[in-house]
Length: 64
Image 1 (cartoon, rainbow, N blue to C red):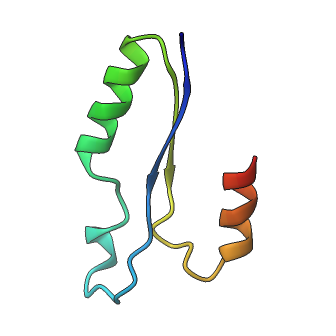
Image 2: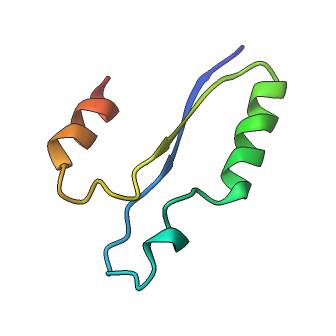
């Protein structure tokens, strides 16, 4: 039975020196998404590296 899967690259609690180090989700997240898609699941990947100031937006997406 296919599932809907949400993969999230979360924001960091600590300040990073170089934002470009965290702007792009790790490639492993895409590999996991690809494998799930290959097995018939619906996958969405969200990049929330900059969402620490928008907790209401995060809550709305998770409820949906």
